[in-house]
Amino acid sequence: DIQMTQSPSSLSASVGDRVTITCRASQGIRNDLGWYQQKPGKAPKRLIYAASSLQSGVPSRFSGSGSGTEFTLTISSLQPEDFATYYCLQHNSYPFTFGGGTKVEIK
Amino acid sequence: EVQLVESGGGLVKPGGSLRLSCAASGFTFSSYSMNWVRQAPGKGLEWVSSISSSSSYIYYADSVKGRFTISRDNAKNSLYLQMNSLRAEDTAVYYCARDPSVDYWGQGTLVTVSS
Image (cartoon, rainbow over the protein chains, first blue to last red):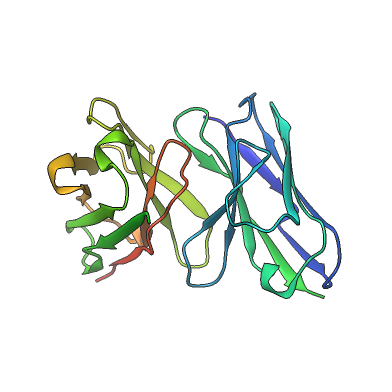
């Protein structure tokens, strides 16, 4: 099984800050990775697909990069509505696996 | 607009069974693989099972293999998850989600396994 190691598990940041979240895969997954945002009591929402493609309707302050085993989600200027938990997901091979999540909190 | 609506959750005793359903609309259901993903209270996301568009290929997480069965009815635009021999650790919100890259999700249905 492919393990996805996501870091950090939580972070505190202020509005306007640049935030970076990382996922490392235990083996190469090409670019078969998505990033999701989840707010309390809601279903996850996909932000990024194919590692670096922005989902339609998602603000351009969100970006993704990486390929193979190292992936990054960047929020260029954190907004109040971005405080949430973020997950990566590899769908290169079964079983699909999620990162452990990153909770982004207000500083 | 893609819509996925889960139903069938509830309270069940350990060892019991439950069948979840997911009604799909807004896309050609028969052309897409589908997934079930769950989230235990206060925990992260866990992929549970996938089924290909024609039901030819089915995959399960080790944690549910032998107890859960995924199926679909393309004529009814519906996805199912039959859950048997339920355990306390199966307590979670269960989401259906569209493949191939898990783009759209339903709102989830809560399954609670408790005596």
